[in-house]
Length: 481
Ligand code: NAP
Ligand code: MG
Image 1 (tube, rainbow, N blue to C red):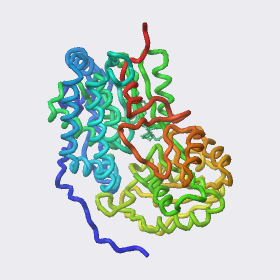
Image 2 (cartoon, rainbow, N blue to C red; image 1 turned 45 degrees about the horizontal axis):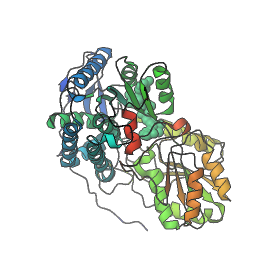
Image 3 (tube, rainbow, N blue to C red; image 1 turned 60 degrees about the horizontal axis):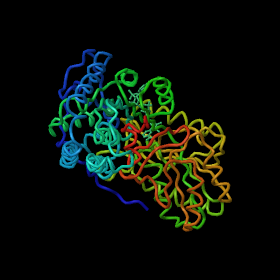
């Protein structure tokens, strides 16, 4: 049985979106020297929200120059205690403006307001608070008595958690004393530009944070810029490999946070209802646009039918639609291009013989949508079991023994995360030890905390973000003695 819900839309009145935005360089919004702008849309309605500047080579040069100047003249000279004051100030402003940021994120990205309001933005603030706390305590982080910053950090982020990925990048960089040039994803620039406004409001010295918008080419120019000391990238494995090639042979320090194809493993002794909630959260949260999504469900054979039945029953209660509605569980797919990619991979699942199921689910006329989908009869050779779909599509496989679960879970080129559902503590530890994945959750999934390092094995990338390990990515840890 499902309940009827009256619409409960969040008000948009709290956000003011300009008709166009320049680049944020040296503390000011400036027109792009390229003279180019591109449009950003609301993927739930296909309405144009604004025009955003497209940074060309001269703009990238100007941004890196501003970051270098700020590094040399102010930020690297400032005490950790003073840097902390700015970062704390930014964190507090984020909290004060949290409703505005959540609405803006949902409009530009298509994710449900419930998620941007309750997950994304609180975590953004938490990241700045956490790293503000580190700024004057770096000598206690385990990187030597007087750890040094690197210089100018070039940071490129994806569209799935736009402001949160910005926070993961900018907060540790600033805490460790680096200055930043960041490029958000083309389809989700607006919260990064709102963050530029927050930097102004916080009186952050000009040039410490620079935001340049644009497409993949702008990102390429930024990471290839010779005056950059550190490159931090979150995005696809394909682009990550291109960046690694571009950076090879330079002195630039590199971290890559790339794709994933995580296994969520359900043993027969797990509390099924609790596990189903975790499995649903693992793959349908944020429309499955989550690098660490639990996109492969491994069910122990003896409970497979029961678990699938519960899963399907639960999926029938999910509401897909207006992301601004507070009751919405599944929002819009971020772009037409991403929707096509999901459709193509889902079709390959059918063509290769897997069985496709979705709940009955009305799809709005406008915008980009994909219903929550489950594939059964999946084999390890199927593309839907091997490739990252980055959408609300779950591939279900089965296993009989813990050894088989380990083998299947690790049978992937990726290694970002894994989930284990069992009542047995000893089995959790045994499994966690064998998972080739950067994060292993037990009886939960998709939990994030700024104190906890996050990152990949194998083709999911290298380097860690968050926690003490994450600080190391922004400090000079080479032992030159
Ligand atoms: P993407 O195509 O790799 O894009 C990521 C960012 O890189 C965007 O800002 C993009 O600009 C830019 N870019 C594209 N080509 C570039 C180049 N040659 N040089 C430098 N920058 C370039 O990835 P996406 O499709 O937006 O994001 C989804 C991917 O991100 C998934 O694979 C997901 O798993 C991964 N992800 C990983 C993590 C993690 O922590 N491991 C977190 C979130 C997402 P445009 O926007 O203009 O294309
Ligand atoms: Mg958009």
